[in-house]
Length: 378
Image (cartoon, rainbow, N blue to C red; front, top):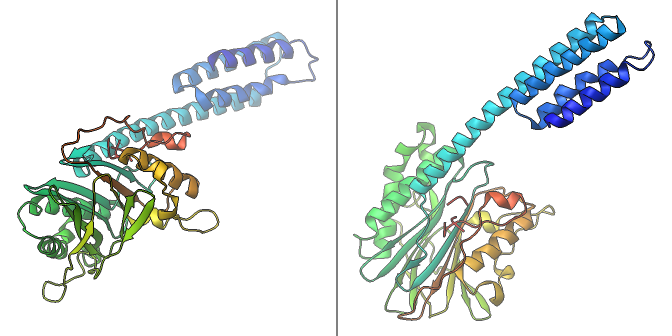
């Protein structure tokens, strides 16, 4: 950029001193600092502005004619674009710092799921709708128990910091209670009570009565080929088996967490078959309610084929890229997905290439979070 700016200055200066005095090409020097500020640093922009002013003064000396308004305009423009470039660099540094804080907060609130828990292989992905954000109101967590694995995935109402606070509260409560409470209905009731009584402390007082979350809580025993679940206003799980994709509909879904009452709400325990090589896909409504330019929802179940669910990471890579293609690269709501594959007893983990990063999706690549942390968790 410095070389281009110097070439422009030199070209304009040499031509201007050769043309008749009635032609004033020196006015074109005013564009050189502006062009330099597009890509160059503030220091380079300042250097270019100084050279442009010197060049204009040289033209005036050769022509033996000084045009004060012309000189004043060049100086004023040069100072303005240099200051603007400096402020832009300052904002960029702040943005980099904020992104680093966001990544740290995500790892603290929503750490990547392990690649393997007992006989299960896992991958997860988080896609935040907020530009430059890494986490919103969607959440997930997994806990090992003496007999198996318990997981939760859900979506806190709303967006922004209140939703993040609610999600962090539910994750912390789930991790604490998942090992203590014997059954999933007891765990669901405890989470509901906690959201109603404690989660409002994590948000603004005027929003305390609006805190609730859809969720599905799962238990996958190590020794039994099944999955147990309690659904609280959440979309159904998808089971991928051979060539079939089957929604696992809840028999009696309960209200979202935070809207039930201990005396009135019944948490129904659903049990479904989950054999070796079966895969479960858990997701939040941000995935199935994503619309394309024509207003059509993303048909998640119809976009899954045997070829793209041979491994949890491969499955989420496919869904991640396909979903962003459907919406044109930007979601209207946060979306979280978890893929869980049940392995044969005694199987060994299969190494899989690490997923790519979410930021590169905008640049044309697909990066998945969940086996890692910004968006499959990278």
